[in-house]
Structures are given as C-alpha cells and as structure tokens.
Image 1 (cartoon, protein in one colour):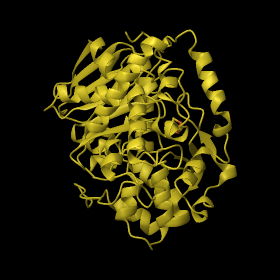
Image 2 (cartoon, helix red, strand yellow):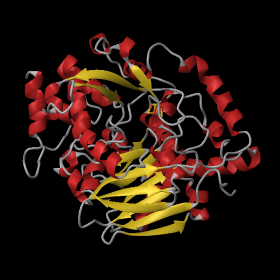
Image 3 (cartoon, rainbow, N blue to C red):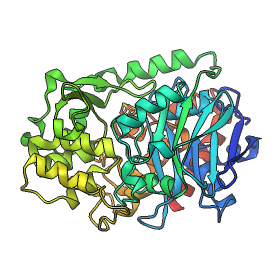
Length: 451
Ligand code: SF4
C-alpha cells in the first residue's frame, strides 16, 4: 500500500552542520512502507548516517492528522548518559509544525563551528548565529528569537544548562521543559545546534472521512476523558501521588493546556512568584509557570514540598531535568538557598554535575526498568495502572506504537481502548489492505523495542 499525500509531505532534509549545507531529498516510499514512520524510520536513518553523531527528528504518518493527540515529533540519537539509542518524545506542536513547515524527517549530522539556530519554514531551512543566546534563560532567548527571527510557532531549544554541558540538561519544547531525561539537550549543545524552530503554515490534505472518524473516536472516549480534575492532577493520581502532593496543586486556579489536536489537556499553567529566580527582570515578580513534566513535578514536590513551583520554574528556565536536580540539590535549605544552589550550577566555565544514577522516574514508584524508560527519553510517566500496561513489555509496545505513528504516548497510555486498528484507519480505511499494514506496524514495533 502506498502512503498517501495526507500522511507525509514527502520530503526529508539532511543537514551537514560542519559546513551548514542542506540537502532536501524525496522521502523514500520503500522506507515508510516497510518501517511506517517515527522512531522506526529514525533508527534506519541514524544507522544510515552512522559515524556522523546524528540527531534524527522524525514524524509519524499520523503526526498533524485528525487522529487525537497527533502532535508528536521524535528525536532519536545516542544518549550520552547511557550510550544507548534513545527516542525522546517532543510534544506541544513540534511534530505538526515540522510537517506543516514541509518536512517529515530531518537528519542533523556532524558539528557546527559555532552555535547556530536552525529555522524551518515552507520547505526551506535557514541558519541563524546563536552565540548571543548562550547562557541566557529560556525566557530571555524566547524574547530575542521572537524579535529577531519572528516567524516561530514551535521550538526545541537547549538552555544554559546544556551550554555548560550539564549531564542533567533537558531540552525545552515550550516554556515548560520536556520529557528529555536522556541528554538530547547535551547532544544538541555538543553539535553547536542551539535550537530548531518551526513555522508550519502549509498544512496537509485530509482524507474524506477523517474528521468524522476523529469525532467518533473522541465521542467513544467521552466518559473517560472527563474524569475528575484537571489532566495534570489526574496523571499524578495515577502515579500514586499522596494527599500532601495533591494539595499543593491550586486546582481552581490551574489553566489547562493541551498539545496539537489533543482532547486530554494534561498540562497546566499555574501562577508562581519569586523575585530571586527572575533576577528582578520581571517587573512584578509574577509569571505563569507551565507544568508539563509529571515525573519532575512529583519528585520535586516530594523533596521540596510547596517550593516545588519556583524550583520547577528554575529548572524550566535553565533547561534542567527536575528529577536530576532533586538528586543533586540536598533537602533542608531555604528556598533562596536552593535556588542559588541551582543557579550556582551554572557559574563555572564547564559544569560537571555528578552522574545521575537514580531511576529516571525519581521518587515515583515504577515497575518499568530504567533501560526501557530511557529507550523513550526517560520522562514518559509510567502509567501502568490503566489497561494492561502494568507489564513492562506491554508498556514498551504501547509507547513504541505511539512513537512510530506520531501520537502522544501519554495519551495512548491514558486511553487503552484506542487500538492500533483504530489508529491505522486514519492511514488506510480499507480493511483488507489495512491488515498488511498492521503486520508491518507490529514488525516496526519489534524493531523499536529491540534496537
Ligand atoms: S496527553 Fe498531554 S502531553 Fe500528550 S498530547 Fe495531550 S496534552 Fe500533550
């Protein structure tokens, strides 16, 4: 079966950072026909450019489609922490924006001679010098980039922690951190690629019945979608958060946020006040904190109680993994002491934070072996109490399914009634030909789980 126009733009970009050259190539039909997309195709491309220290960014056939939670972009690279291949899920709008900007896959090879930002727009790629952005917070970078580069709808940015080569650095996909706990930010910094920006204004065509199919699927979920409380706190409850953590959340004041085409907003904005953190740059000392990282929040809340909010904001602004921070910074200090300790992590010319040797789930009780969590970036919550994902094997296969098709893994773990057949119907509505696609999808899942 041929993948149709609506599944892919049909273009991939291969970038040589050493001379800032860019090749735009047609997406090979055989590649996606056999390996479907996302993490499975990324792995093939990573192997193809072996020896170039590549980072591969890949969408799935459903990224940017009418399928629910179709926001996903997957970054595949060799983790500097484990030495193994890791696939980091990048949410918010990054997958749909990359596709709408004209690319299904981007391979970034070698190392640039100076820090650069790559901006992707209408099927073209442009480099911008990023030297002036080094060591700035995400807020400071954001305001400069929006002024100087302008057309930015989503981004993947390595913050100042990565500039200092911190092993606990984590990329930012908005202002709320990310699920990167395996060193994507550090690998980007080591290649002098400070960030990738997308401005996806082109869109994709859709199949005749995709909207109806999508609405029927959402309707089928309606009871489980509208459970008690905001999505962020529902995930915390599933992870076993106790009342002392749940009571920290200002439920009535939380503003929920969802990624591209997701009916289950599992992120939220809360107000946070701390002048120390903002160095007096914020005129009233108040800003909204975006919470996206459930594991990071739970671990910091468990360690620092009500101070979790400003500490989480500090991690977001400096591009740090909150779970790693909780393992580095001792308990017991005042908030100002803790924040200055975190800030102190960036005062030296070359930061050497101790190797983080705990489980990537921090203090959250988890049955998923670390190497399996790290295969998928280390930050996906171990939602093992829903469906049959309490077996590490089933959890792994469910996450691999999401990472191949381009659907958010958290969404698929939360809603186990959605089957692979439901999702594949967005690619191929015909039952007969779909069964062969289903077989190839299972083989691709095997590959991702084995690799
Ligand atoms: S489940 Fe949460 S992280 Fe996933 S797409 Fe929806 S809002 Fe985004």
